[in-house]
Image (tube, rainbow, N blue to C red):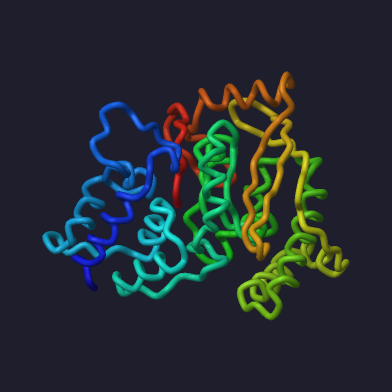
Length: 301
């Protein structure tokens, strides 16, 4: 592992990122043209001390960054595909999948748009509904995404195998969501072709869920592009929102965001959500932390 070269590479990438590009204020006292070390650490979900040690070459404490840490740094530093692969090679880690999976490299265009959606809940997911990155308002609305690997990382998988995953929607809406999820998954399966990941997921879901098996056998197919959702929030009650999707060119990633028409109760609840922030309410998409205001930065997995 070439830690000194890795540290130098991180420093040069950090210097080229302007704060505004990642939703951070420039500030009058900024002494560096790019991001500060602590800002990169925040964006990547790392401690400032750990990131500082990485930039210094890691020899003092023998740091060994994991694939998850490298993926988070690639997102925080807006690395393109070649730069991301170079970072993994310097750390002597297997290259992650480029298009899908929980450690997939987020499409730069989607990530750039996500950074600008600071006043509305938004996240980037794969075509199997695995969350790649989300902002704080998305965590406040839906709960933090779980750190599961494998099939459990997919919300579609959890929807059909874990009853708790359905608590975020009113019971009367469950049949409609089940139909939509199954049809959307069939579209993803067709797009991927003979993909082992989606083939295994479908096989397991057919065994574990009679509901899914029946829906799958209808052969209904439909890509979810826009939907009106009623979301059950533990503190704010039922929130009526519109959910929009913007797809990457290959269709394997999508940026989705939630909004409500001005003057509606849903819009008022979103305003209140930005004040309440996240709290330990055991939401279906994961468990958040103590009550804190939701800042205008983007949380990285």
